[in-house]
Every structure is written in structure tokens, then in C-alpha cells.
Length: 141
Image (cartoon, rainbow, N blue to C red; front, side, top):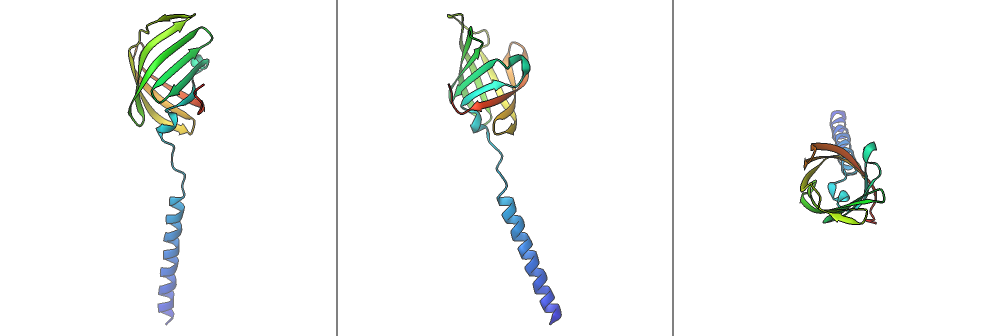
């Protein structure tokens, strides 16, 4: 009888342990997805670009550099974490000019937290590029 009780208590403990593991694994926080970065106000994480403000909604992006230059882009999301930026125009001191860059292909390569991601870009004048973007708010202005 002692062997039978011991067997049941071992099974009972094993079952409880498995249930605890299952419950704890289900309660882990889900990693943020790229959808959090499809709209909002952003800045670049690199020191040389920290003065650039980025205003993005689902299908357009505006980058403002200081008080004299504004660049306008169209966004096409090609995947959850990939998008194309197509240059529309740049306004410099109230004069509109076409942008030399035609299309940049952006891939979000790593999500660091709810507001920061790393990316790579191809298609620009400098070739392949890497950087960090930080989301300041959900607002686009």
C-alpha cells in the first residue's frame, strides 16, 4: 500500500509541476511586432541624425530636418517588418525639389523594445545602410 501511495503522490506532483510550467509559459509577455512602428513620431538613434523628426502613418512618411528642410515619402509595406520608401519631394526653404533617391528598401532587423528597432536599408546613394529608430509617440504630429 505504501508503494501505491508513493506512486500516486509522485504522479500527482509531476502533474502539478507540468501544469505550473504550462501556466507560466502561457503568461510570458509576447514580443512586440513591427505593426507598432507603422505610424507615429520617431527619431533616428544615431547622433548625426538625432535632429531629424520622422512623422509616419500607414502609407506616408515626412522627415523634418531643422526648420528649413522637409522630405516627403510614400510607404509601401511589403511585409510585417519590411517596407519601401519612395521619394516624392523635398522642400528646402519653401522651394520644392525632386529627391535624388528613388526607393529605399527597409527591413526591420531587430526589435529592441516597444519603442526602438534596428533596420537595414538598400537602394540609397550610400548603398546599404544600418541604423536605429526610436518611437517617441503614437501621434503623427
